[in-house]
Length: 334
Image (cartoon, rainbow, N blue to C red; front, side, top):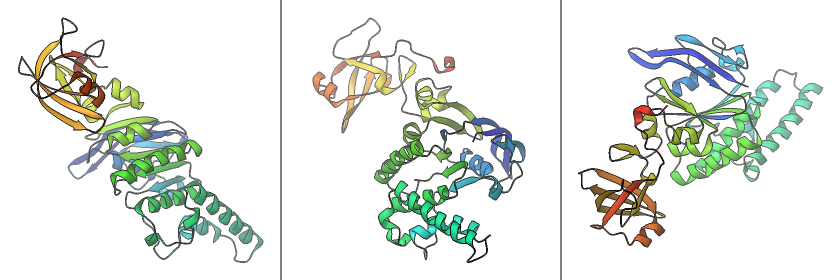
C-alpha cells in the first residue's frame, strides 16, 4: 500500500510546519520520518492519517486520493507515543475493541454475529501470540509494564488489518533499555507482518537500526531520502551529516570520528601531528580529543583494544590520517 504525498504545505498561524513536501513511501516498507522536534515529521504523519488537513497538496494511498477522506475511511492504524487504552478493559478486550465495533453492525444473536465473534476471538489470540502477550490476555493495562502496554497498543492497531500502520514516536515515553528491546521487536514484527509502516522518531540510532528507508525532515522541508547506509555514508548536506552521527574536522575536511586512523608515527605524508588532550573510555569505545599543531581540535573514536595496543595516554603525540579514500567537502556531497 504505497503512500504518495505531493506538494503538501501546512501552517499553524505564522509557523510553517510543512513547506511544499513531496515524498513517496513504498509499499510494504518500514519508513522512518526522522528530524528534530518541530521539524514537521509528526504533522506529516497526522496528515497521512487524516487527523490534520493540509493547506495545499494531496495525499494518495494505493493510488486513491485520500486528501479529503476522514481517518476512518483511510484504512490506517495509528499508534501514539502516549498510548490511549481503556483501563477498565483487559488486554484481550483492548485489542478486540475495533473489531467489536464492526461486529455491532450485525444483529445480536444472529448467525452472522456469532461467526464474527468467533473470528474476533481467533484474531485476538493470534495477535496476543504475535506481540508475546498471550500470558497477559486477562490482565488490566495497569498491571503491564510500559513496553507491554505499547505492544498491546500495536496489536490493537493491527487487529483491524490496516493497509498502513502509522507510529508517532511509539517508544518515546519509555526508558532507553526498553526502547532498544522494542525497536528490535518492531523490526522482527514488520518482517513477519510486512504492512506498509511509517514511524516518527527523533532518535537517529532508532531510525538507522529499524527502518528500510529514512526521510529526514527539518524546518518543514525534506532534506534527504534514502536507506540508512546511504544517508550515513553519503549525506546530502551539513544538516543530514550532523544529525545522523558525530562529525569532526581534520585538516578542514568533515569526517566521522571513527573514520580517522591514529598512529604513533606518520604512516603517510598527509598525516597530521597532534597531542592527545583528553581520553574518554566509553565501554567498548574510546574517544580521544586531539589538538593538532595547527590548533585544530579533532575528535577521534576507536576500539578500546586499539587504544590499548597503542598505549594511548593523555599528552601523547599522535599522527592522524583520514581513513576514507577521499575526503569529501560537505558542499560537494551529492
